[in-house]
Image (tube, rainbow, N blue to C red; front, top):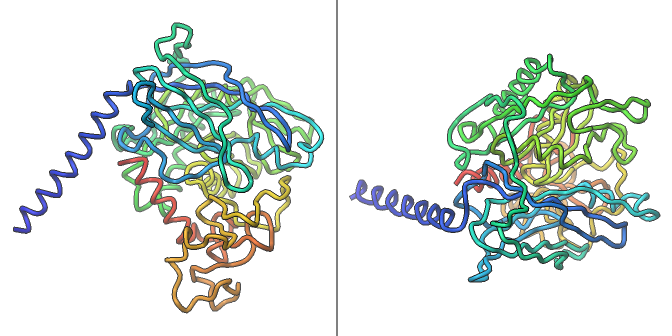
Length: 426
């Protein structure tokens, strides 16, 4: 009887997967469509424009979970079937532009930033809908565009420009989380170092939770994109380098913030292999990094804290985790609306704590939770996080999303990461 029950469960699981696979095959090619955008504006207003459509040779995401279930991100987009009006695909994401809009500079000038979105390549005409999230948590539509995937002016991306090395291979991309590392500030004769640096980061990640428990669900790729010069740009020192994706420290005048505004170059290089998340590995001993949800993450190769910083930044980029610190200098102003529950899974304003980690609390844990030794290893509700000391709460006294001294992710961050890994691999 028990064997029969197990066989029935396996049968229905296989049937569900086959049904999802048939849905994908009906509506999509096993390739990617990329929409290149420009986001422009200031603190008060923003607009968006499509600049180009591209067809890329790989789809690295799940073929089963095509509709976003997390509601993360400051933006989201939908792919709507023209014939049935059904949602075929959806995804949330964040941008460097929205971060810039929270800075002092955005009060006084206008700027434009490149942005791209990718999704499996539709077989039939569809409508692309882009939404923005407002400070009250509501969404409105920024752009609606009908697209014919057979349009002859959709650029066909040519690959084979760079050496691609698969550092760790655990299986087919649509069943794995594919982390794709891009070389930045590595000259052509430094690519052996680049591949070794990727392997070091991969080995570190796979020893940390929740990667450790899911280590057989990850592929690691290295795209050997050479730079004319070694190392990144350091504007505050007057150092400008000719590199593959033009990464630079001092983003928004914060010396440790390492970012790139050359999104098109990053996506062009990333098109060489399938991916779920892009990581720009910068050839530098300097401390710093950056990570933006469903955008990309950056970190350095040789700083003594490089691994701790990288797992933190991928926490932003892949898992949608917020910064839990509140004492470090940042350029953002009023980044979170304290009257709204933030979408990030590891911080709360207590407006809707039930939607966060309330179920993980012991009945003996006070809310808010005092940050003293009694609760040092307790999942609680500790005030301070999201760049402010009051009004935003984090789940642990210390966590990798708070500091480099933490032993690792807190239980809430592990749980959020585990859910994302399962979503991307099922």
